[in-house]
Length: 271
Ligand code: NAI
Image (cartoon, rainbow, N blue to C red; front, side, top):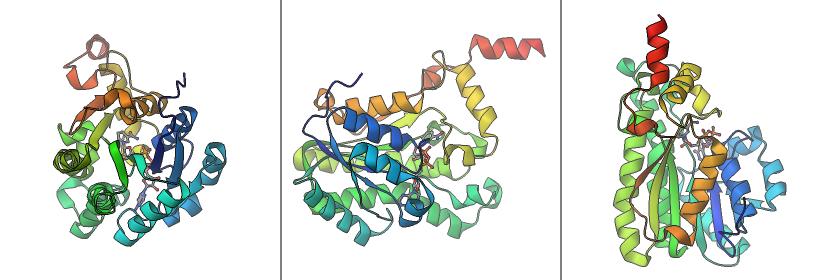
């Protein structure tokens, strides 16, 4: 279903770890739609994951960057503009990590050093990336910058732990920076709130399988897949959404607007 929506556009894709990653699907879909891209991830993830395979499929260079390091981000934008021969049209921030979730700390017993680290990786990194790009004037007019988020920013999902705060902060940055970038040179900044998706980061949340099935049963269309999420990202990178900015956009098969579904009622009535 590639329609060359990104023909002539140049992008940077953060966060492809393995072929389950949402960013992996976005990279493939962007290239299928005519874009040229650079792939990036934290140096440790480049050693652990399988990004080389994606790079060869996408004919893309990999430029390592820890998204919490301003120095790495400056190098990334500089080297990407050289590699792609010009300014950047789109960026995907597909990064999330909570040390408290990894170490199974309950929400009522958080370690605050872990909290600060997770906030830096999952949310402040988005501001850092935007600020570096802004100061370097690295994004073309009507460029589009996206980050991925989850509905736990608005509603409580107990096992999502301190990632809920990280996502709230992330979504707020999209609104605040979106204002300044819109004024500066019409660059759009949005977040996509995606359904639960079977990936390394997703399945790190305890009880993820039940979480996934619950969302699937509530959503009238079922959970949105990572492939469909990638297609939605392409539409937001394209010129068909030029005036969409400072939004948190739900890509969830209707989950966010549904109170209860017949499927859930049927399950509960059988008990
Ligand atoms: P993933 O585990 O494949 O991707 C997370 C990425 O973050 C990895 O590539 C990892 O290397 C990268 N990362 C971690 N620390 C980094 C750092 N310091 N610098 C640069 N990169 C770093 O998992 P997934 O699910 O594809 O996650 C992508 C995004 O989608 C995350 O923001 C996640 O919260 C979000 N999301 C995921 C959902 C799910 O159920 N899987 C649902 C809604 C949103």
